[in-house]
Length: 95
Image 1 (cartoon, rainbow, N blue to C red):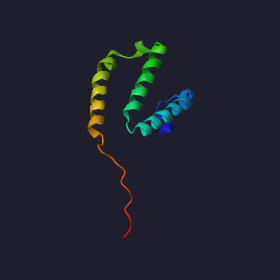
Image 2: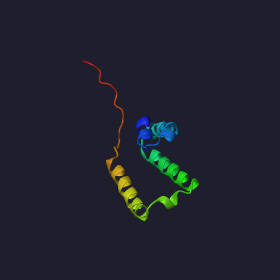
Image 3: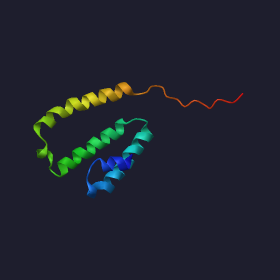
Image 4: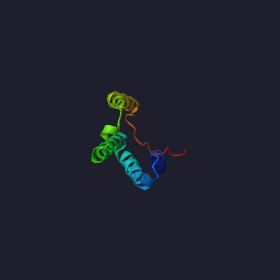
């Protein structure tokens, strides 16, 4: 999944650092049992990179307007699809 994450970012020069971030995000998801920490980390990474490189002016206005409701809908859908009470059950003994 980390390689796919890197490839979908479509930048040859950022392939290895993005794949490394993908590994870290996957581990955060596995360790926490939730995708939310990885989502927050990814958003923070993108936000910090945009402000560090002063790239915030390149985004069109419609993206600034569409981003908050899109994020809200995505978070709502993730919240609705969460699984509750998942507990590993012991193996059934034969017999």
